[in-house]
Length: 260
Image 1 (cartoon, one colour):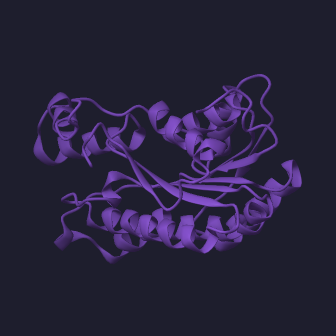
Image 2 (image 1 turned 90 degrees about the horizontal axis):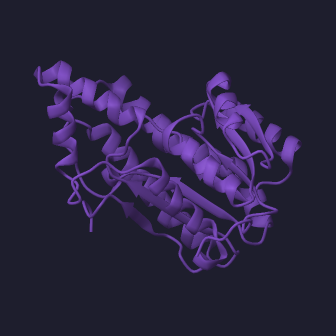
Protein backbone atom coordinates (compact mmCIF):
# COMPACT_ATOMS: atom_id res chain seq x y z
CA UNK A 1 0.00 0.00 0.00
CA UNK A 2 1.35 3.42 -0.98
CA UNK A 3 1.63 5.85 1.93
CA UNK A 4 2.76 9.50 2.04
CA UNK A 5 6.52 10.00 2.46
CA UNK A 6 7.24 6.28 2.05
CA UNK A 7 9.94 7.08 -0.51
CA UNK A 8 11.72 9.71 1.57
CA UNK A 9 15.47 9.22 1.31
CA UNK A 10 15.28 7.76 -2.20
CA UNK A 11 16.73 9.42 -5.27
CA UNK A 12 14.62 8.47 -8.28
CA UNK A 13 15.61 9.04 -11.90
CA UNK A 14 12.74 9.16 -14.40
CA UNK A 15 13.59 9.22 -18.10
CA UNK A 16 11.17 10.73 -20.57
CA UNK A 17 9.87 12.78 -17.65
CA UNK A 18 8.66 15.82 -19.54
CA UNK A 19 5.19 14.75 -20.57
CA UNK A 20 2.46 12.17 -20.24
CA UNK A 21 3.27 9.03 -18.30
CA UNK A 22 6.74 10.23 -17.31
CA UNK A 23 5.44 13.49 -15.87
CA UNK A 24 2.73 11.63 -13.95
CA UNK A 25 5.29 9.20 -12.53
CA UNK A 26 7.53 12.07 -11.46
CA UNK A 27 4.64 13.83 -9.73
CA UNK A 28 3.59 10.74 -7.79
CA UNK A 29 7.12 9.79 -6.76
CA UNK A 30 7.62 13.33 -5.49
CA UNK A 31 4.30 13.23 -3.64
CA UNK A 32 5.56 10.14 -1.80
CA UNK A 33 8.78 11.80 -0.73
CA UNK A 34 11.33 10.80 -3.37
CA UNK A 35 14.03 13.19 -4.52
CA UNK A 36 13.86 13.40 -8.31
CA UNK A 37 16.03 13.74 -11.37
CA UNK A 38 13.88 14.43 -14.40
CA UNK A 39 15.62 13.33 -17.61
CA UNK A 40 14.69 13.98 -21.21
CA UNK A 41 15.86 15.68 -24.38
CA UNK A 42 14.03 19.00 -24.01
CA UNK A 43 15.17 21.08 -21.03
CA UNK A 44 12.33 23.59 -21.37
CA UNK A 45 9.70 20.87 -21.19
CA UNK A 46 11.43 19.25 -18.21
CA UNK A 47 11.63 22.54 -16.33
CA UNK A 48 7.93 23.13 -16.99
CA UNK A 49 7.16 19.72 -15.50
CA UNK A 50 9.41 20.39 -12.52
CA UNK A 51 7.42 23.53 -11.75
CA UNK A 52 4.26 21.43 -11.37
CA UNK A 53 5.75 19.26 -8.63
CA UNK A 54 4.79 19.80 -4.99
CA UNK A 55 6.51 22.78 -3.36
CA UNK A 56 8.24 20.40 -0.97
CA UNK A 57 9.80 18.35 -3.77
CA UNK A 58 13.56 18.26 -4.30
CA UNK A 59 14.09 17.90 -8.01
CA UNK A 60 16.59 18.64 -10.72
CA UNK A 61 16.49 18.59 -14.51
CA UNK A 62 19.16 16.81 -16.56
CA UNK A 63 19.03 16.60 -20.34
CA UNK A 64 19.77 13.20 -21.83
CA UNK A 65 19.51 11.35 -25.12
CA UNK A 66 18.94 7.77 -23.98
CA UNK A 67 20.14 6.41 -27.33
CA UNK A 68 23.62 7.91 -26.90
CA UNK A 69 26.02 6.17 -24.52
CA UNK A 70 28.10 9.28 -23.80
CA UNK A 71 24.99 11.37 -23.15
CA UNK A 72 23.62 8.76 -20.75
CA UNK A 73 26.91 8.47 -18.87
CA UNK A 74 27.19 12.24 -18.47
CA UNK A 75 23.55 12.58 -17.43
CA UNK A 76 23.80 9.99 -14.67
CA UNK A 77 27.02 11.56 -13.39
CA UNK A 78 25.17 14.89 -13.22
CA UNK A 79 22.27 13.22 -11.43
CA UNK A 80 24.59 11.81 -8.76
CA UNK A 81 26.52 15.04 -8.39
CA UNK A 82 23.34 16.99 -7.82
CA UNK A 83 21.29 14.74 -5.57
CA UNK A 84 23.42 11.77 -4.56
CA UNK A 85 23.31 8.04 -5.32
CA UNK A 86 20.34 6.67 -7.25
CA UNK A 87 18.11 4.04 -5.66
CA UNK A 88 15.13 4.10 -8.05
CA UNK A 89 15.29 4.07 -11.84
CA UNK A 90 12.20 4.41 -14.01
CA UNK A 91 12.98 3.79 -17.67
CA UNK A 92 10.08 5.58 -19.30
CA UNK A 93 11.59 7.20 -22.41
CA UNK A 94 10.05 5.72 -25.52
CA UNK A 95 8.75 6.34 -29.00
CA UNK A 96 6.32 4.63 -31.36
CA UNK A 97 6.21 4.70 -35.15
CA UNK A 98 3.88 2.78 -37.42
CA UNK A 99 4.28 1.25 -40.86
CA UNK A 100 3.33 -2.02 -42.55
CA UNK A 101 6.15 -4.48 -42.02
CA UNK A 102 6.95 -4.59 -45.75
CA UNK A 103 7.46 -0.83 -45.71
CA UNK A 104 9.37 -0.64 -42.44
CA UNK A 105 12.82 0.72 -43.22
CA UNK A 106 16.00 -0.37 -41.50
CA UNK A 107 16.28 3.17 -40.14
CA UNK A 108 12.81 2.90 -38.54
CA UNK A 109 13.62 -0.54 -37.15
CA UNK A 110 16.88 0.62 -35.61
CA UNK A 111 15.29 3.80 -34.24
CA UNK A 112 12.56 1.86 -32.43
CA UNK A 113 15.09 -0.54 -30.93
CA UNK A 114 17.45 2.28 -30.01
CA UNK A 115 14.92 4.46 -28.19
CA UNK A 116 12.82 1.76 -26.55
CA UNK A 117 15.27 -1.07 -25.84
CA UNK A 118 18.84 0.16 -26.07
CA UNK A 119 17.92 3.27 -24.08
CA UNK A 120 16.62 1.05 -21.28
CA UNK A 121 19.83 -1.00 -21.43
CA UNK A 122 22.12 2.06 -21.30
CA UNK A 123 20.28 3.81 -18.48
CA UNK A 124 20.08 0.64 -16.42
CA UNK A 125 23.79 0.03 -16.77
CA UNK A 126 24.50 3.64 -15.78
CA UNK A 127 22.39 3.40 -12.61
CA UNK A 128 23.00 -0.21 -11.65
CA UNK A 129 25.91 0.17 -9.23
CA UNK A 130 24.02 2.78 -7.21
CA UNK A 131 20.77 0.84 -7.25
CA UNK A 132 22.51 -2.29 -5.96
CA UNK A 133 24.43 -0.39 -3.29
CA UNK A 134 21.21 1.12 -1.92
CA UNK A 135 20.16 -2.22 -0.45
CA UNK A 136 16.56 -1.93 -1.64
CA UNK A 137 16.80 -0.61 -5.15
CA UNK A 138 14.00 -0.50 -7.67
CA UNK A 139 14.11 -0.60 -11.46
CA UNK A 140 10.80 -0.13 -13.24
CA UNK A 141 10.70 -0.33 -17.03
CA UNK A 142 7.73 1.19 -18.79
CA UNK A 143 7.02 -1.33 -21.52
CA UNK A 144 3.59 -1.64 -23.13
CA UNK A 145 0.91 -4.18 -23.86
CA UNK A 146 2.85 -4.25 -27.15
CA UNK A 147 5.46 -6.18 -25.17
CA UNK A 148 2.86 -8.79 -24.23
CA UNK A 149 1.00 -9.30 -27.50
CA UNK A 150 1.21 -8.36 -31.15
CA UNK A 151 -0.23 -5.34 -32.92
CA UNK A 152 -0.36 -4.84 -36.67
CA UNK A 153 1.65 -2.06 -38.32
CA UNK A 154 4.00 -1.47 -35.38
CA UNK A 155 6.25 -4.53 -35.66
CA UNK A 156 9.45 -2.69 -34.75
CA UNK A 157 7.87 -1.12 -31.67
CA UNK A 158 6.37 -4.47 -30.63
CA UNK A 159 9.72 -6.21 -31.04
CA UNK A 160 11.45 -3.55 -28.94
CA UNK A 161 8.88 -3.72 -26.13
CA UNK A 162 9.05 -7.52 -26.06
CA UNK A 163 12.78 -7.03 -25.65
CA UNK A 164 12.23 -4.70 -22.70
CA UNK A 165 10.19 -7.38 -20.93
CA UNK A 166 12.83 -10.01 -21.66
CA UNK A 167 15.53 -7.75 -20.25
CA UNK A 168 13.36 -7.08 -17.20
CA UNK A 169 12.96 -10.78 -16.43
CA UNK A 170 16.62 -11.66 -16.94
CA UNK A 171 17.89 -8.78 -14.81
CA UNK A 172 15.37 -9.58 -12.08
CA UNK A 173 16.93 -13.03 -11.74
CA UNK A 174 20.46 -11.62 -11.63
CA UNK A 175 19.56 -9.16 -8.87
CA UNK A 176 17.08 -11.25 -6.88
CA UNK A 177 19.45 -11.83 -3.95
CA UNK A 178 20.76 -8.27 -3.87
CA UNK A 179 17.74 -6.41 -2.56
CA UNK A 180 16.80 -5.06 -5.98
CA UNK A 181 13.53 -5.66 -7.79
CA UNK A 182 13.12 -5.22 -11.54
CA UNK A 183 9.66 -5.04 -13.07
CA UNK A 184 7.89 -3.80 -16.17
CA UNK A 185 4.66 -1.85 -16.28
CA UNK A 186 2.72 -2.40 -19.50
CA UNK A 187 0.16 0.31 -20.28
CA UNK A 188 -2.50 -0.16 -22.88
CA UNK A 189 -3.51 2.79 -25.02
CA UNK A 190 -3.06 5.79 -22.73
CA UNK A 191 -3.98 9.48 -22.95
CA UNK A 192 -0.54 10.62 -24.11
CA UNK A 193 1.13 12.35 -27.04
CA UNK A 194 2.03 8.92 -28.48
CA UNK A 195 -1.64 7.93 -28.67
CA UNK A 196 -2.65 11.31 -30.05
CA UNK A 197 -0.01 10.88 -32.75
CA UNK A 198 -1.36 7.38 -33.46
CA UNK A 199 -4.82 8.86 -33.94
CA UNK A 200 -3.40 11.46 -36.34
CA UNK A 201 -1.69 8.73 -38.36
CA UNK A 202 -4.90 6.70 -38.59
CA UNK A 203 -6.75 9.79 -39.81
CA UNK A 204 -4.07 10.54 -42.40
CA UNK A 205 -3.89 6.95 -43.62
CA UNK A 206 -7.60 6.13 -43.73
CA UNK A 207 -9.42 9.44 -44.01
CA UNK A 208 -11.53 8.54 -40.99
CA UNK A 209 -12.45 11.13 -38.39
CA UNK A 210 -10.38 11.58 -35.24
CA UNK A 211 -13.39 10.42 -33.22
CA UNK A 212 -13.60 7.18 -35.21
CA UNK A 213 -9.87 6.61 -34.90
CA UNK A 214 -10.01 7.13 -31.15
CA UNK A 215 -12.95 4.74 -30.88
CA UNK A 216 -10.91 2.12 -32.73
CA UNK A 217 -8.19 2.32 -30.09
CA UNK A 218 -10.65 2.33 -27.20
CA UNK A 219 -12.36 -0.78 -28.60
CA UNK A 220 -9.44 -2.95 -27.50
CA UNK A 221 -9.96 -2.04 -23.84
CA UNK A 222 -12.73 -4.12 -22.20
CA UNK A 223 -13.49 -1.13 -19.98
CA UNK A 224 -14.17 0.91 -23.10
CA UNK A 225 -11.75 3.76 -22.39
CA UNK A 226 -8.16 4.92 -22.57
CA UNK A 227 -5.86 4.49 -19.58
CA UNK A 228 -4.78 7.64 -17.74
CA UNK A 229 -1.12 8.47 -17.02
CA UNK A 230 -1.91 8.59 -13.29
CA UNK A 231 -3.10 4.97 -13.38
CA UNK A 232 0.25 3.92 -14.80
CA UNK A 233 2.06 6.05 -12.21
CA UNK A 234 0.10 4.38 -9.40
CA UNK A 235 1.49 1.01 -10.44
CA UNK A 236 5.03 2.38 -10.56
CA UNK A 237 4.79 3.90 -7.08
CA UNK A 238 3.48 0.62 -5.67
CA UNK A 239 6.37 -1.31 -7.23
CA UNK A 240 8.78 1.13 -5.59
CA UNK A 241 7.25 0.58 -2.15
CA UNK A 242 8.42 -1.81 0.55
CA UNK A 243 5.12 -3.63 0.17
CA UNK A 244 6.17 -4.82 -3.28
CA UNK A 245 9.56 -6.17 -2.20
CA UNK A 246 8.69 -9.72 -3.29
CA UNK A 247 7.41 -8.62 -6.70
CA UNK A 248 10.16 -8.95 -9.28
CA UNK A 249 10.49 -10.04 -12.89
CA UNK A 250 6.86 -9.22 -13.57
CA UNK A 251 5.21 -7.52 -16.54
CA UNK A 252 2.17 -5.84 -15.03
CA UNK A 253 -0.52 -4.87 -17.49
CA UNK A 254 -2.37 -1.61 -16.86
CA UNK A 255 -4.85 -1.95 -19.67
CA UNK A 256 -8.40 -2.37 -18.44
CA UNK A 257 -8.23 -6.11 -19.08
CA UNK A 258 -6.90 -5.97 -22.65
CA UNK A 259 -4.10 -8.36 -21.66
CA UNK A 260 -4.70 -11.08 -19.06
